[in-house]
Image (cartoon, rainbow, N blue to C red):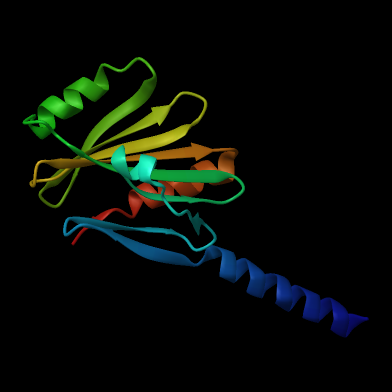
Length: 149
């Protein structure tokens, strides 16, 4: 009985370690991030691609969507000012990573997001829909892992 208990504990620790693994994803030549390995990458359809979606992944409690959109001649500061006026968003903060600035925000009652303006006239919009506190922590960890290439 003791051996079964020890084997069960070892198996549980192995499974916990597998869930905690992450994968690095690169976006253009600008930046990368780490996302949990248990997120299933979704195949994008023509409609999503035509709307600018470049990445989608999800598990039972967390959905992650990424769009690459044109800044239409706006500067990063102008783009961020527009986003800060959105009543649907809260906790809007502008930060920097290396030479690149980015904006993070909360989506009331649904999750988190971030906007990263790039030097090539594009910006990336990340949206995370979170079903529970653990998913919210995972989304924050993804945002915290964003790093320039």
